[in-house]
Image (cartoon, rainbow, N blue to C red; front, side):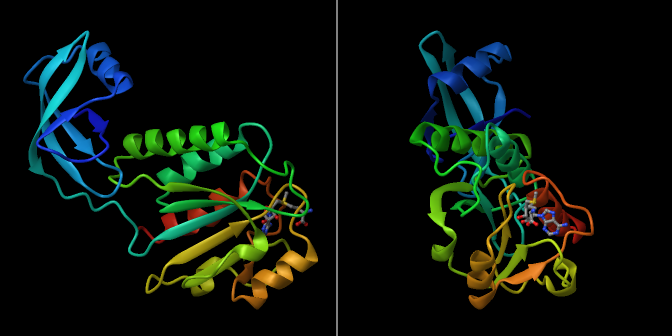
Length: 228
Ligand code: SAM
């Protein structure tokens, strides 16, 4: 069944021009059934009650259980990357179940900052990926902060080449989890020291050096491997 992202579940839900156009392209008719989700965990069936040049409107049906979220929220903290690499990371991280993506400014970053337009684009990528992966939750993509401002809540793992520990040695689902992944130039010694001092465990992703856009997915692959 086609899934539609709505701002909130309500008795009657007008759709934005993009979603309305999408329903027209799919050649849906008044009376068609769709599934709606609000990005905050709410999901329900809905009926198309209007679909014309002026837009589309849905009527709320029964609520649907969506149990596709991890047992504890997962945060991916990832360094700013060049070009469109962050879009690929956000898309895949959403498919792999993250609750939020925290962008990081790092000493050896490929790019020092990103503009508002790019942040909006990344949030749109997360919304599209949550729709496609049948999640009811759309991850937040949070504006960049320096590594020193990253606060640990629960368990934290920092991907750093040459580390002895592995994520699978100690990952458990009794607390929220944060994964940290660096830029193409790697983390500075001071950044690694600051993160480990605040409780992040430095972990290996194997003997090969992964690209900065591959490492976050290898970290999150450990989540997928636990089957949650
Ligand atoms: N010369 C850099 C260094 O030694 O840190 C390589 C950086 S790597 C291209 C980019 C990021 O991916 C790293 O900062 C780290 O977070 C992660 N990474 C890549 N390969 C890794 C590995 N084998 N083990 C742990 N982390 C890795």
